Image (cartoon, rainbow, N blue to C red; front, side, top):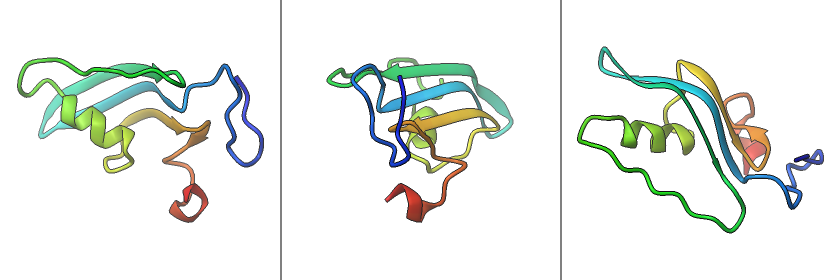
Amino acid sequence: GSVDNLGTLTRNDSPIRAVGIDGTGGRRLLLDGVSLEVPIGQSAVLMGPNGSGKTLLLRTLAGLRKPSRGEVFLNGVDIYKTSVEELT
């Protein structure tokens, strides 16, 4: 899909997209190259045992925890390369 300069989604885009996310919890690698897309009008469910990285992934998608590698896009805009002012 494509994004105009205001971050507007086209019909084929996903409002939430993560590409190649790595993240650690303490000294453990919990997210290893995780990629995820949630298309417009769809829902996603995260399931897994305790300590598997579900909360870390959600915090990363929400912009609360920068991944050690990878990118997170909200409406086509990389949230970790964009200022808070530009995202709001």
